[in-house]
Length: 241
Length: 241
DNA sequence: CAGCTTAGTTACACCATATAACCAAGTTGA
DNA sequence: TCAACTTGGTTATATGGTGTAACTAAGCTG
Image (cartoon, rainbow over all chains, first blue to last red; front, side, top):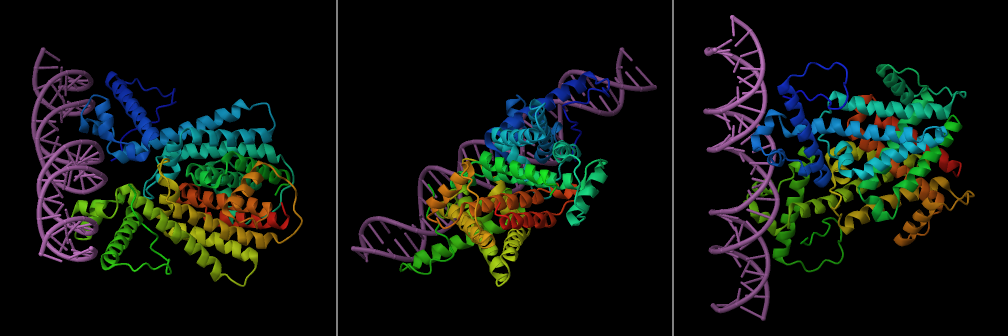
């Protein structure tokens, strides 16, 4: 049974009076998540241990099950935290490049994404690597992913501008507009959606392979490759293709 | 200390006399690898257990350490097996599309790659997902990856043909020709190398995200997206870009 | 057939998840 | 106020994993 676990960050409004006990409880949950994150950073998924966390908090073993129903439950909460962290970092990276051209914004998005993944490789692998197939991300986590996608789409929309667009209407386009409609963001044109999802998968492909040390074995640099992809997306956007 | 572990498959020549004991030993190793692979297929990396394997083989616990020095050692051997399996499947997929156009060959490569990953998602995640950062693939494993890359490069070379090529010589190109030279395959032109690595990372990006169930949450289909990327690479090859 | 090597055994140390039974303290309401 | 309930902790225990040590039986080798 998965327990409460609201996102730590935010919800500054809707402050329910928050009784004394609840405050302490929330604080402990925060500490647990922090230690868990550190474990993942240091040793990957394998190093995530409720027992070790409990010991570090000065309480012994099973006490932690008062806060998280299982290791997987904690893992889900961690996923949510990490998604938020990633998307926040990317957003800040883009905002820090403010005032420059749309192309520069896109490059900043890519650089921030890759930079974060290289800084926290275990976290990135946790999100997109390990994953047990049956494992279901909590709602807020997937919502955060969509948030990152929206940010990307806005950048690409700037890049595309409002040039005439080819009428394609293939299967991919149908899926994309269905997604946008379901999200309640009908404002993006098909070409923007198309380039957005292409860029995202390319970005992930590069970063993921780079972390797998496959690139190292080949003498390739992820940054160089990523520059190339950024260039190509910008060209495509410019050509409305 | 990592033990012997030659690739099971092949080396039909160089048959060293292979004493009776050696044959039995090799057979047991084969069985172990098979069970390990099944464990991974069923429950992912977490389900890989020396103890369980031993029990299934009728021997008890520590006996397995006569065959593999540690769980990580077995994991390395498994990596090699899986790479071979993947590359073999892709090669067969391409060969089965023989006699058709270069574009169709490339599409077959992509379809075989993705098809294999979807058929054996846990194996794919094991190769490119889990990975402990310090974990080093055995030599034969990386060699097999390069083999798959070579196959791809040959297909793209057909696609490009021998049209005039732009003289770019940027950082990416330098890395690529250095890799090709180191591999002793100087036959590929820079544009082929460039499109090859781009296609590979894009392919991996799509497949990887598809397995992460992120696509499911967005209502996207990996096959559709992959078709789009195949089309774009073919266009780029046709334009020598 | 003596001696070495191989492949197995049991016993153990240690760590992990997770449940059960219990208990102390805080919270709440009649 | 104080009885009842809730919360957060405890210890004990079942189960299963990695990995080492010490030992033994059987096969191979000279």
